[in-house]
Length: 96
Image (tube, rainbow, N blue to C red; front, side, top):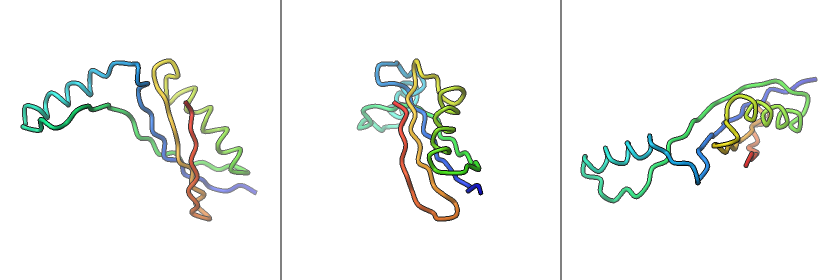
């Protein structure tokens, strides 16, 4: 029997990678008068709903999905929160 899971995936640039989009937003904020903003890093937020026979299988699939498509492992890190839609329990996962 399979269960339905929902994952909230966060993909961010590695700290050593420059973020020109974040720099542009920070510059725009300074022009708007927000001088107190020290740093902005831009990332991606993705929601995935999937069926899996267990939480472990869902985590394995999500790791592969992130590594193969959603994140570039050379320049990005990802993490995800996994929730069983039938039990509504929050679980965390990391891919760093």
